[in-house]
Image (cartoon, rainbow, N blue to C red; front, side, top):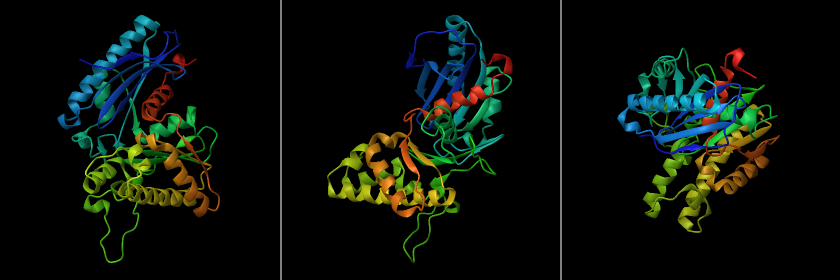
Length: 320
């Protein structure tokens, strides 16, 4: 029923175990980890977002129970804390700005998961800010203050880390850079959030670039193919996208003066091209340009962030 189950290391006997859940528009992953944050076992399955939240919450609950049983039988410890992350602005009774997960706009994620898992509480957070937490604790943002985590995938988002913490914002919406205004030609109306647009994401997000390639090239290109193609049309699309993205990142750097910008997400399959474009623009546009680095957790930062969040909610008696 639940495919893609895999052990990721030799069995050990940690002092505590935690479970992290990463809900995405395409896939969901549930992981059992020890008290050092090392994943011991993972279960991955298709989210099937079009069928609503109930079915994926039920399957996540089944996966978590399977992993909790593994913790008891193979590791000899109970699961002491749970955490989950998802796209969007997570509030106690709803999740906003998550168009890829229909039905989640009225979902009280923490309460529903606690009920599904039969536990007192589940910590929840935005997936990109959770990814930033993972990079801050164990990855490429360690020692950087302030730092910026940039996630480039189907959509785009960012997170700001300050003083060892990830900034949430007044409405838990810090880093929603998909809604930045990249500018528009004089005399043309601006695309705005109020009109249902995510202006920057519609120009540089992976989904938008794939759609543009289909329209202008007649085929859908992945990021690595687009950014390395010798086709003149593809090169123009790639140049325009990278120029727009680099301008936005440079503006963020001018505002917050980060020590380091770390870039992750699925589009980092074309990492060398993207990092080169960002580094070049920051060097020219920012008085004190930050270092630009690839993320340590390029493919699963959100899942590692969910694990880190669960570790933060371990009972004191369960920590080592």
